[in-house]
Amino acid sequence: MKRSTLFRRPAAEPLDLGQSGDFGYLQPGEIYLDAACQSLRPQPVIDALTDYYTTYNACGGRVKYAWGQKVDNAVADTRQAVLGLLALSAKSYAVSFTLNTTFGLNLLLQQLPLGRFDRVVTSHIEHNSVFLPTITAARRLGVDRLVLHRAADGALLYEPAQLEKAVVVVNAASNIDGRQLTNLAELVRDTHARGGIVIVDAAQAMGHSRALLQKTEADAVCFSAHKMYSASLGVVVARHELLASLELSFVGGGMVQDVREEDFDLVQGDPGALLEPGLQAWGEIIALGRAIDWLAGARPGGLAPAEHIAGLSDRLYNGLAEIPGLTLVNTQASPVISVYAPAQDSHRLAVFLSKSRISVRSGYFCVHHHLKQQLGLPPLLRFSLGLHSTESDIDTAIQALARLMKGLS
Image 1 (cartoon, rainbow, N blue to C red):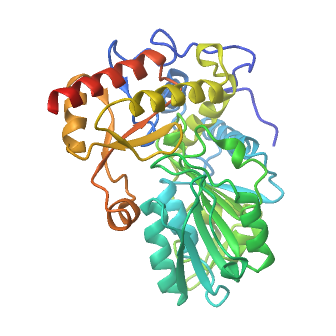
Image 2 (tube, helix red, strand yellow):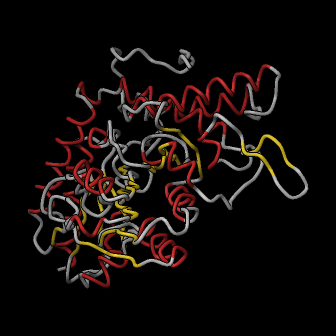
């Protein structure tokens, strides 16, 4: 379907991302460094969501009146925009919308066909959104679960024989230190050669590392729109073959074209609908389409988004490395940097930074197994960047933490 220009901004038009621009609602002195949890939303995305709720708040896929038709067209545009973002074709992949990445991963893993797979494979550095569903999926399938290591550069360390008829579920970028799945293409190739499938948790990658995922041949890519400048929403991009193989148990309206007393017929020609039971978050889906268009034109400080984030990452990494008493978990700069102070409580540090209007995350970031059980680390302090971030934000945060560490020593 040809995309409409409903939410399109010309790519050549640079967007003002400062406090007077698309993030103008940020109060002076307010520093938000928790984009790995959820990114801030630029004003055009907020406006798109508000516009839906106030001017054409209708159900999609169900009604024939004008508001509903406008919703259907905008939702179709968003599906196509998601495929475009990943450079994938609708001939092979379908886009489904869910609650979040965790929900999407569960929808796939808990409905895989019995008897087809011999093992479930994941890694030690996975978010609980992957780590926990792979435990329950292995139990349901009645197969072993193999937990592998990742290299310092993020590559999954495996022997090809370990991928025999495997369900491989790994992240494309870590929410601890941002390391990326650098051998994704090889992993997919080796897994497919042995009759397995690869499902990618792309929650941390879609905001700033999409190039890694473009033209992927993975069987599914799951991510959260709220980590890429849009409203709270989950997205699953899956191969038609994987969707057709699912033994569906989570069903509802929107998935069926006819229902009898003891049976039903699934919709035909719409593979994405197989993961969309019930009413969808139409406004949030439309907002994601606007976010994708917005990202295409974003030029923070006149730079491409990746260049802007890379510069800030280096500045943050180098600044944190110079603070006495602080230990970096990262081995290199990244949009996500975690640290800890052996002599201080990270939660306490986060509270003190908050008093200076600096918002950072503290804890284990839903990676309890790796950080707490495997490495034996205390709760961490995490700094994560977004396109709203500035050099001034970085410098202010580093200076505040340095003063805090000195005062507590």
